[in-house]
Length: 136
Image (cartoon, rainbow, N blue to C red; front, side, top):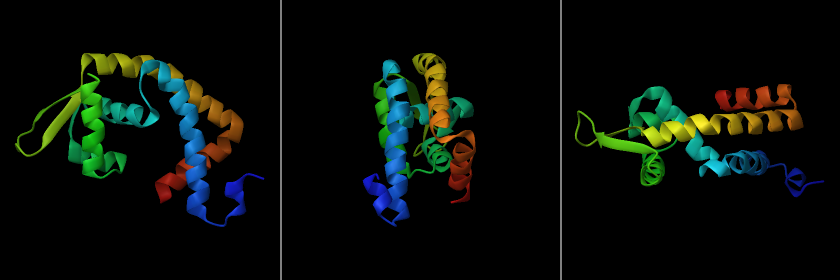
C-alpha cells in the first residue's frame, strides 16, 4: 500500500495525487519546454487576449505575487509580453507570437496526458476530481 494511503490526512493524500498527475502532464509537455503550470497560465492568457496580473491570479486562483513570478519566467522565455495598463501600477499581459505557437503545438500533448490520466483512473473519477476542485 502506498505510504500516502497510510494517513488519514486528506491534504497529504491530495498532494501525493497532485504530484503524480503533474508528473504525467509535465512529461508530456517537456518537448515544448513548458510545465503544466505554465501551460495553464498560457491557456488562460490566450483565452483572455490581454489580462492584468490581478485578473490572471483571480482566474487561476493564485496570489498576485505568484502569478507575477510565473509571468516573468514566461516573459523571459519569450512566450508572453507585458505592458502597463490604464492604471500604470497594473501590468497587462498577452501571448506573444511564440507563445501562441507553443500553446497551439502543446495542445495535442496536453490531450494525450489528459487521456492517459483518465485511462488510469477512469473518466468518472476524473470528473469527480474536477467537481471537487470546483466545490472547494
